[in-house]
Amino acid sequence: MNAELESVLAEVGRTVRAEARRRQLVPEIQARLAHLESRRVRPRALRWSFALGSAGLCAAAAAILILRPHPLSFAIAGATQDGPQDGQVGASLVAPGARPLELHFSDGSAVTLPPRAKAHVDALDGQGATLAIEDGTLEVSVVHRARTHWQVRAGSYRIQVTGTRFAAGWDRRSQSLTVNMHEGSVLVSGPGLEEPVRVVTGQRLQANAGGANLGFEASHDIVAREEMAPLPDLGSEGAAPAPAPTLAPVPIDLPAERNPAPARARHVEAMAAGHAGPPSPGDWRIQAGRAEYREALAAAVLEGWRAECGRLGADDLVLLGDVARLAGDLNRAEEAYRSARRRFPEADRPSFALGLIAFEGRHDYRTAGDWFAGYLRSFPRGPLAREAAGRLIESRLKAGDDGRAREAASSYLRAFPDGPHAALARRTVTP
Amino acid sequence: MLAPTPAPAFADDGELVAALRLGDSRARLILVERYEPLVERLVAGALGIDAEIADVIQDVFVAVLEGIRNLKDASALRSWIATLAVFTARGRIRRRRRWRWIRFVAPEDVPEVPVAAPQGETREAVRATYSILAEFPADERIAFSLRFISEMQLTEVASACSVSLATIKRRLARAERRFVEAAGAHPALDERLARGGRWGKS
Image (cartoon, rainbow over all chains, first blue to last red; front, side):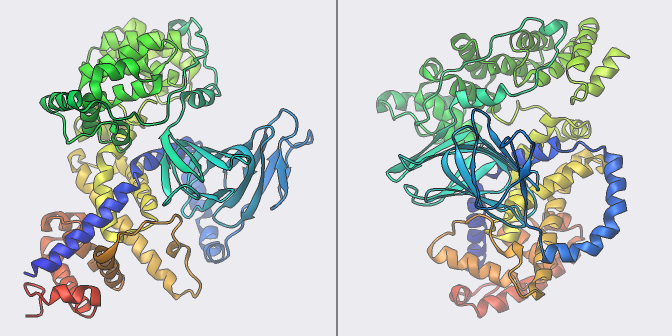
């Protein structure tokens, strides 16, 4: 056996896998699948008949379409009172007055310019568009297709996009770029970045010629998006309205390394807890972003678990709870979530996450139901309201509380008649 | 943020498959969390460093979600996903090959995002390996990459390719001969070949 050549091939394998891992594809795949799922509005049977009916035409047209792809087009909404108008490549786009300007592209992608933001569409082709930000922050939602190729330019920066949602901000005076990723990932290159930087879901990149800072998206941005969610009617279990959440912003810098001596002691604690290693201080969020939850938990323990619970902002504290939960350490997860709930009563996620632990970790369905019902009472408009309402039905059913299960199911159907738990709710209401 | 992956539910594949058939979005998240590394390993091995890997992996999971109702044995989920990954990667390889006759550069050959390449000797080895594999018949390329690059067992390779063990052995034998012959003519690999052994010149 030529062990050397086999080892070369194994090395090739390790290299290509490492490169794939470096791209952190899991959040991107999750986001793409969620996006596809959300766009499946046509009934399956209709889709099939439509697909079969048009298959002949598609086959005949496919070669022409492939060889000569149509450039995208876009319409502008909000520019005038007369309704949408066709957009032109190169034309300056500025939102008039206090209303945002919306660009709707023929591939389903959309871009929103808030008041005072300036941009233009630099180019259009069959795979996507190139946008240029002149000033301000654009909300971009690109629909992923087989060969999607979108780009956003801001000064000397380039943002490569496939399918994703993000906000890209350009401050012309300071020549600085800010990218907040809502879903998926983008690749950013430009001044202050030694090599292209991938920004994934939940991350924020700030860059200028002096350098760059990659951290986590500030919670006020997330809240602002969540407030755009539709308002459900939650029925009796979610009667009391709650004030709109106003989370404090969290720092986006990673924490600095602490005193090494206690850190070493905490390392021992982390290892004794059976967590994988070797962890290093300050990087648990990065490891969490890579779905390496056991390693992330060990690193967080190394940093000082209790101190982290008392120090972190709302989002990071919930993330810390998520890390512990996904690493299987339910006690630490509950500790983090309870701490978040106590310190940030306006944050909705801790209640929901505690329900998840009771439901899936402890199989204590009565307690789980109470958490989900509590979530709905406190956050009837919360981003997880639909999921909580569905979980509430499941919890009541599993706890054998058929009466309250029917009540929860009725509420669910009123609020989310097409939701993922609608079938279960109907079966529960009409056994 | 609440992490995009929920609590460790659906401990066994039977529960996961049942939930996927009901359209449970949590199950979808766990499916990707649990099996993306496997799919990534197979696809990356077959395609190399490639800007379209995310597209291919997405296609695999779309195929999984669309076909889950037809999966008869939930305990076979893992091997079924591996098979889908192999078939999807092979389809991508064949599609690229079909584009070769067209004079202008096919869209598939244009990376949609820049891909950072490894450096030095490893870079040369990666480049040489995939340039050689690009000339292989798709079935042989897949079998070879699964066995020697993704480092799968023979039985796993046969299962993923949906052929018998005897067939995969014959296919691998042809691929090995083809690879050794091509590697011997490639400066980046020839030196290592010369060191002897199963594939060696001695």
